[in-house]
Image (cartoon, rainbow, N blue to C red; front, side):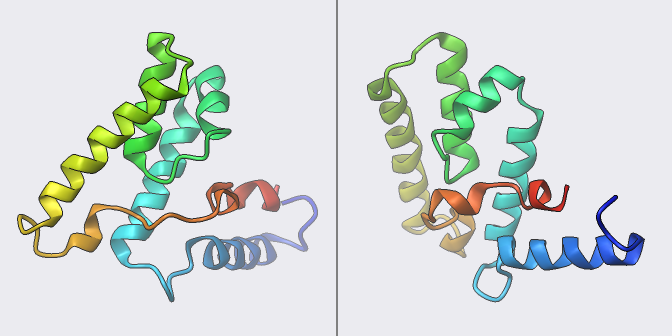
Length: 124
């Protein structure tokens, strides 16, 4: 905010950053919502868990939750984390086969880890 010309400039810049991060022209409302919830979930985790989860670049809330739970249980081994993620994916695929009208609501397609970085850090 201090580097901006004023409140309007800050708002304009945040809008630009949000457009680039959320990409509403290519993502569905459900995918955008998943990104926003993931961002908020990561931001409220205790700092040690947040750092540990963040560097593993979760692509969905389900992955972030599995990673956070693994950290809390003291399982630092990737094999245990993978098992939790595979279990979540199997359940999602089962639902996608016909139980849900719009399978797109079930998750965000894989994306490069850099897209999970907070756009707000650039604005600060």
